[in-house]
Length: 152
Picture 1 (tube, rainbow, N blue to C red):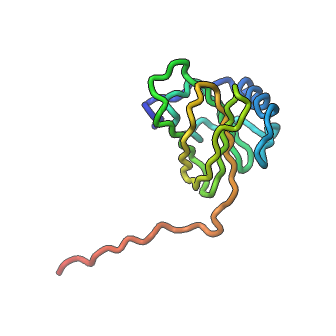
Picture 2: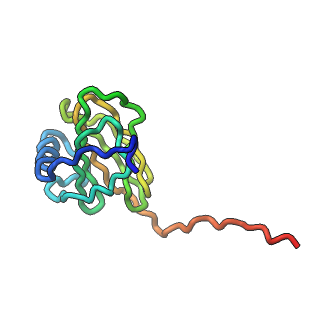
């Protein structure tokens, strides 16, 4: 269920991808950032959006995600500002580009499955670049739950 009960309006994939590629071309990109390899992702990759995001595009490539987020011009709320992605288990680095300033505004290392990150509200469009940096060596099973034997 999306945050605040709504999804942002999806941008046409070709328009959002062209915008993302143009923004990335203006800055030093993070390691592994290959905008030419990005492809449209299923919208279900993102399960919660910040309330201020009104238009968005979601893209993916092997081990990375790119999310274009356009803000409401006069949002009622800018906090909390969580973005939640349904991604495979692992450690990810999240970089947020403030498109209008042409500067990286935020970086965070998070463990995902799902991935929960906070997005800074900049009053402008942001591009979120998320890359997998470490997968679990061995899947970790959930802890066993001790159950008391029935009373006699």
